[in-house]
Amino acid sequence: MAHYQPLHDWNVTPAEAVALQQQLRSQIRIEPLTKPPQTIAGCDISFNKFEETVYAGIVVLRLDTLETVEETGVIGTAPFPYIPGLLSFREIPSLLQAWQKLKTEPDVVMFDGHGTAHPRRIGIASHAGLFLNRPTFGCGKSVLVGKYDELAPERGAWSPMRHYGEVIGAALRTKNKVNPVYISPGNLIDLETAMALTLQCDGGYRIPEPTRRAHNLVNALRKGERVFS
DNA sequence: GCGACAG
DNA sequence: ATCTTGTCGC
Image 1 (cartoon, rainbow, N blue to C red):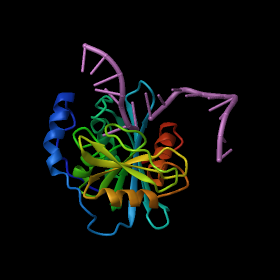
Image 2: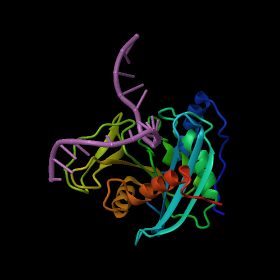
Image 3: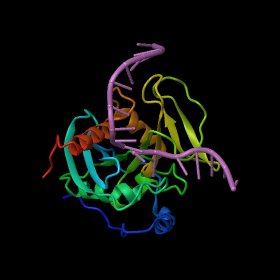
C-alpha cells in the first residue's frame, strides 16, 4: 500500500555504494517539519548469526498516546554484508518491503542508526528518507563518527556531536543516569525536532518506543512467535 | 602505518 | 547484530 521512490539498484559493490552515497547526499534536506506529525514509525531488522536471512519490521504508533496502530514484517535476504558506513545497503532493501505492506504512511520515521552523523553525512536514516520522501531521523545506540562533551546525568540533557567542525547530531539522555542515545536528522527534519520527538516517545526505557517495539517485533518474527501475511 | 568502526 | 547467567547499583 505505502509506496516509495526506487532511486537506485541495491545490487552494488562496496565501492559503488560509496559512490552512490556521494551522489545522493546533495539531495538531503535538513529543515523544520512542514506539518505537525500525528504518527511515527520505528524500523529494525534481526537475523541469526552467520545467516543471510533477515527479519525486518516496522511499527507505527500515534505520537500523542504512543499506542501502536500498525505493524508489518517481512523475511528476506541481506544482499550486502555489514560494513561500517554502509549499513543502509544491508538493511534498507528489506525495510522497503515491510514499508510496502503498510496501509497508512507514517508522518515521520525513526531509524536504529544514524542520519547525518555519518562520515559522508548520509547514514541509513538519510538514505531511506530519500526513498520514502518523508521526514526521517536516526536514533543510534553508539557513535559512528563525531565527538561530544559529556552531558548532565538527567533525562533531557544533551550535547552536540561534531565532526570536522560541523554539528552532525546530538547525544541525548532519554533516562536519568543511563547512557545517551545519538540523534541526527535523516531528511526533511531538523535536529531540534528529532530530539523533541525522541523525548516524546518515552516509554521509560533508554530506547524510545518506536525503535524498541520494532526491535521486539523483529525478534519475535525471527523466533517464529509472530507471523505476517 | 595504526586504530576506529551505526547494526 | 547475535551468543548468554549472574551480578552490581539505584
